[in-house]
Length: 141
Image 1 (tube, rainbow, N blue to C red):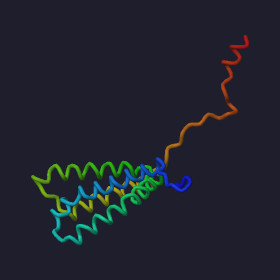
Image 2: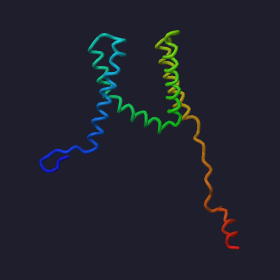
Image 3: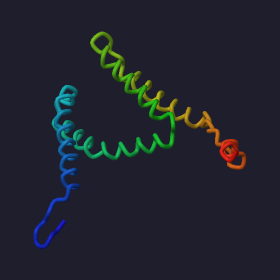
Image 4: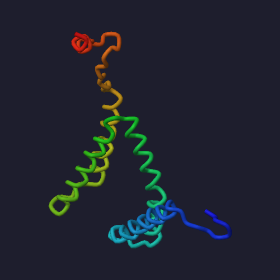
């Protein structure tokens, strides 16, 4: 924003700096995990760049799905529990990647199908024409 000939920073600019710096911190934090998978610097850098670019857009996509499908957030919760259990038992038993992908995909699809197939419960709404006026009658007496 300009004030006279000087540029001034608004509080929104500070928020933008904080959000972008946390993106960079998380991207740098994930580099050792990627290096454990591959030593190719091209893959390491490009995967981090795409993660930074796609993460915010992915949030809004998932938020839209959560509004559209009422059981979607529960499906995501089950996926996170599955991934957590997979990480906990990884020293004892290695779950094949294909199996893990099938489980994650199945959980997401089941939550979406449940949202479509199970009707939303109807809330009981009082009919305005049948109000109980007994309190008003008692007060008038």
